[in-house]
Image (cartoon, rainbow, N blue to C red; front, side, top):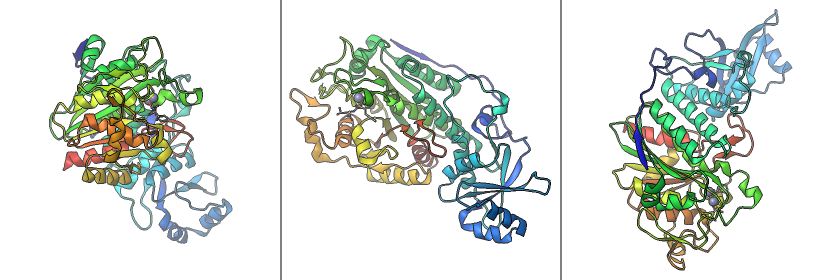
Length: 486
Ligand code: BES
Ligand code: ZN
Ligand code: ZN
């Protein structure tokens, strides 16, 4: 079954630049007409200078509060009547996360940052601060009772010079991604992932095409094979948006729950596997950011949505299955399901012209052993693209680390008994083997990159609450933004 539809959006609340400000306050961003209390925003390198220019009373207060002037911290100075007279906030190298710190350490209100002694923080600093400020306001409240108005978040008012649509897109994209991941698997089935994609597409007047049922089984046999054991059937989601600019295709692993299949995961390893659609959530969030900012690109988003379940219909270890590319694959392990669904989606991606294809996937535990949970692994066909992605990741304070597509390990895939193995049998270098498997479908020529992500914060840090996380989203946004404006 294939169906295609297009819905047009209702009008929303706009600011004078035409940005949708409806959700801004939920994110901790004040409306342009709000009156704000000002605080001095000071770079840590200027802190001593700022103190030297302050009054004796203020310096005494700084000492009395034992205030150290760390990046991300803030201090409020009372007047003789005990009311706030002045406030100061500090930031340093990681402006994004310092913004998160400021949102927590400034008392609740409506705030605007003002120029201080020395260097004026540039727009990008303010944007980064505002981004972290907003990301720290996130909580997963789908199952919480509606908050009352007293629970208003701490608000930051932006200077007119800030690129509001870029900022709001990145914020909302991250929130969307986190919400999709945090939603438990019984409420985030392939059907519900499709619904989220449809809502997104209609909001931006994008077209969306869903393939499921018998058509999926014939045209995307690997996605079908992975998802056929589950109660809610698998599907391929295909969104298109934009009429000019480079062709960008985002591909996401959308395994809504990964039991491991017949190669069942032990319970501790299975527990977190609602996040196995983290790649899909990241590309949907990234698409939201791109469409909100109206980046001049022709965007395509492919999500392979399936649940890796256990039943009498489940694929078996060493089954030989078909793929869209026509290659036969021997299932080395039913828990290596992500690469199978991505194989078909990458094949589809390669059937049209592309300037850049990137997939996001919670693909291997091995990538996490290599780099830990906070540093996604980047694999890329082309050195210059890889370098540009790493540069963008540094600029966006959203780190990526490149791992090699080491040709010699290709032989592990060729060592299947009856056909190309999906896993190889070495047991070592699993993140590389998985990436090499994907490359067989993406092709060696394509400007293709693959990001193996955790998509989950194991513990909370400023601006990064425990739970689902949009890792790599801002880095790749930055890369695409440059590609679009080149
Ligand atoms: N979704 C998992 C990978 C994963 C596990 C990501 C934990 C992040 C945290 C994936 O489907 C998987 O189970 N991969 C196997 C592959 C192996 C059987 C070849 C793995 O990495 O162990
Ligand atoms: Zn798995
Ligand atoms: Zn998986």
